[in-house]
Length: 353
Image 1 (cartoon, rainbow, N blue to C red):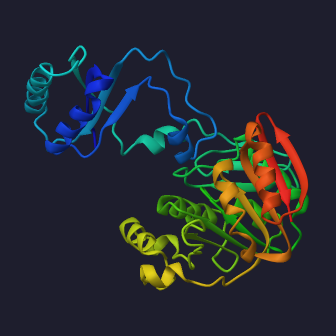
Image 2: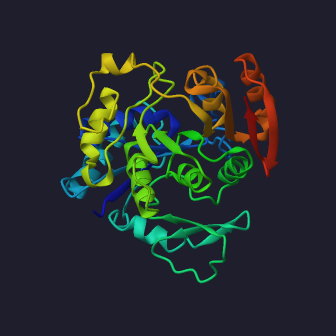
Image 3: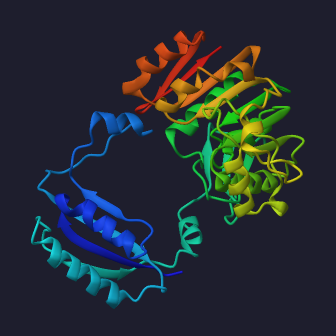
């Protein structure tokens, strides 16, 4: 679908009133652009390691919305213009300029993105190979990881993912079990199988990520007896999701409904929210890997130990170097012994047991 983007040049003072007015007209969401500094309180509520770099706060703002063809765009513009004139009697509304543009066709964005994802090597003998690309430089002993879907984070190009792959190569032993928390595209889970893991469970809070992971696992020929993915969130009442369904039976709407209820089951039945929140730990793992963010890893370290075997390892990444000491302190507080710390660029991986 091609959407219309409508942007109003206004003032910071008028943003809330304009947003409320758009909501009354049936617009379901707005995008606000300004240079107002983010407060410490707001920053603490965001899982962000690198704050946005803002320009000088000059009091101006842009309010944008995206509407489909159910809206009469000319009528919408006229209603907004009239409201801006009315508001101008009470507050500064800025320039009041209203612009309209077409977005690109959202049904093709993934295929457009694919043209920039090319095969590449990691650690000499791991080849990340998009299934739509050809790669002639396959060498004896190479591990070829096939990527079918790019609908979720994790292609192996980012330093945080490379750090985790390196630590898995270093510590994972044949036959061990792996729990990949925040599995994204499933690349760490899939590489774990190639490295010899006996069973891998990947989990993500996003049903689209689970779907992408299942597609990528199947592209590599792995069935659910060796690797599987679920929707779940250990920070939500310490709940771990059950076994997901495979790609052929996976319906996004059903997945979202079941995720909201707390679980995705192999038979497709959603547990009640109350039952799912009290589910017991049903498996312990030799290795838990979490390539997320520092502000998620810290609270996660307080709830993850029941899912780890007695001598299990916790491999963490996604930690910006400015938060390294804070993460270490939290891991130690929660009973972990730090055994390895490596850096790549601004990013840190901490391994503990």
